[in-house]
Image (cartoon, rainbow, N blue to C red; front, top):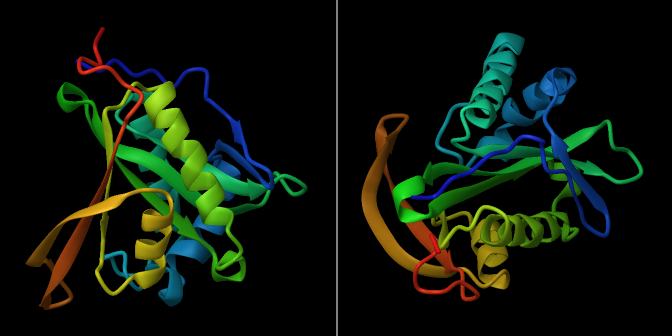
Length: 191
């Protein structure tokens, strides 16, 4: 079975980004991001409306980290490390199957600049090389063409399309499932 430990917290640098621990001071940026209708359009959750919901989301991130069930990084520009511009993480870690789900969010001012792709490549590398994952999956709304392009550009393959698999705001929504296998790993990842 997969053993993961996120202490000490693994900071990651890309060419332009610092992936760092989400801090309590980031809750204002969490609020801005998760209350933004453009950001939340394909997430399958309503935009948050209170600062308490941002604090609660921060606590979920922290609990997941402390329980070693998932890890979420704050994305920040290297030259502005204190300002969170998005999040990226590996969550829904299924330890017995060496599998996790990747998720990411970025404020609209930073879209279409290649920043999410930089972060995804580094998080894949971390998941495979440090966590010893065998596979990483992503669940997206099929109309989220930006996310689909991002996943495909980082070698994810669409493995499934579930019709009306998700009920949200009074309607059934479809889900596209993407996956990436760790090609560097032996057949038994526990060795």
